Image 1 (tube, rainbow, N blue to C red):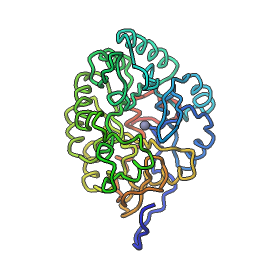
Image 2 (image 1 turned 90 degrees about the vertical axis):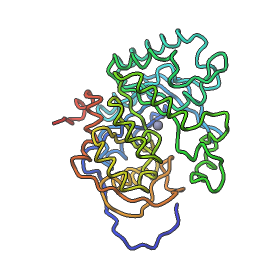
Image 3 (image 1 turned 60 degrees about the horizontal axis):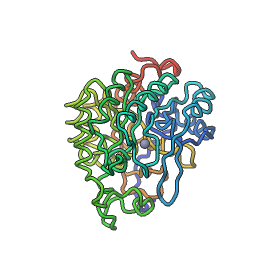
Image 4 (image 1 turned 120 degrees about the vertical axis):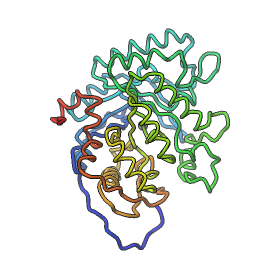
Length: 362
Ligand SMILES: [Zn+2]
């Protein structure tokens, strides 16, 4: 927790969001004990939860994780069928695999398989394609070369998503501090000490600006494909940059999952941004919904969006309040904007979600 503050100030008590909420960015990682998640959702007013990695199992070890392919039918049986309307998923198609082995020997076969699996999963109910940050940082081809997200060999995959009218949610880069030396003056020092695998300060990794440049190139190359760029386009340290990106690329949306810390320390510019780009911003948390602090985690997001409360702590990336970096301020958005961000914008991208949740657009 951050330092104790002795302010006597207004703290709006929020139990539920002002409108129904779709958490459009989260992960179950193959953990199908979802009763606890449902309980949090009901308490917070979250009507629907997206498991972006519906066909992925993950194993955590040594401050890191290993990605393994899972079976999308496990998600269907344990989540979407068991709790109709409450869960939907994206698929990673055949990108769901450990980074230790080459992503492909034969790029054409990999792409053909990816497209075939994607089509199959979409038929089974997957609503989009998810690409983790491992593409561009870790995945290599059989010659040992790093595969960048704008690699021409992958071109057909993004085109196919456009043809299927499903969004691609692609994570590239990370907070600026993750690419800087892990020293006490790094603003993310505490998190990087706890999770060493989050650091990309080693020069063997591409720099943040290069990753973003390639991603920006990717979205420009595929204007008929909808891209959701998570974590405020992974450049919450530079709001103007993200604003320009949205203005220049009508096929791009962002979510602001795991970035209310960055945004809440720039409340005036953030508010201006949220008003200006209100049709392009999607709600997501990317934080566990099955732990003790989960209710508080959601309520802090709502408080950030809905109130002008000052100087409160946001949850860290793992959904706990143990390592708050700095206090944040709320941005007091008007109701019509909140409604778009909480569920209307994601319904525009994925209209079929509306049928199950009785949420409709004007
Ligand atoms: Zn995520």
